[in-house]
Image (tube, rainbow, N blue to C red; front, top):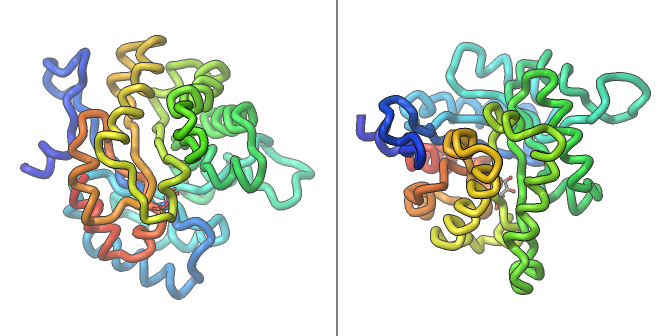
Length: 268
Ligand code: 13P
């Protein structure tokens, strides 16, 4: 019961109404790591402990392992997501994977706009918004990632950068789309660097992002899960997830070890 209390955040506007609480979500982004043997072991380890997680649990393997992981998760409560999706439905798009294919493989979530895709693959906010809509059209829940670089933070542009990234999606998909989507704030300077944003730094940006949504709909803003990502570990997850506007985490490196990932889930 204690777990449930920690996992659910009261909503600002509607918090007095019983039952309207935000549940927390802990998502593992495995990036381009693993092989069929290591993934079998990782999933078994996660399944052994995920049942007692106060947070919802999501894993996002590389595309080629989705079927393997889907089969292993079968009737568990652990959700399956992909790391990227094409804007196109089908056709001559070599190497791309469509939202309907992800759905067919058992995915219910997909990451869109991860900073590694924005930076390495040159994905613009407009393209990310189109991917979000492609996922939405297939009933997939997007985990929309936004985040600023160190340069942008030091120039005082954090809020402007993450707002632009978020608003590009809101402009194309509409605010109601966030009823079935998740936002993830991942400061680029904290990803894989061991430098976590402090709980206060993260909370400040999360509150700003919720305010961006609230300008369009207070109700949607209140219900929207906003995850923090960037060097989350079992040792810092409790403090981060305790913040009012942090509803869980998007985990990279630490999601590759079942023990660490479950330790983070326990903080959810
Ligand atoms: P790390 O947890 O390795 O910093 O990665 C965060 C991330 O990019 C998750 O999407």
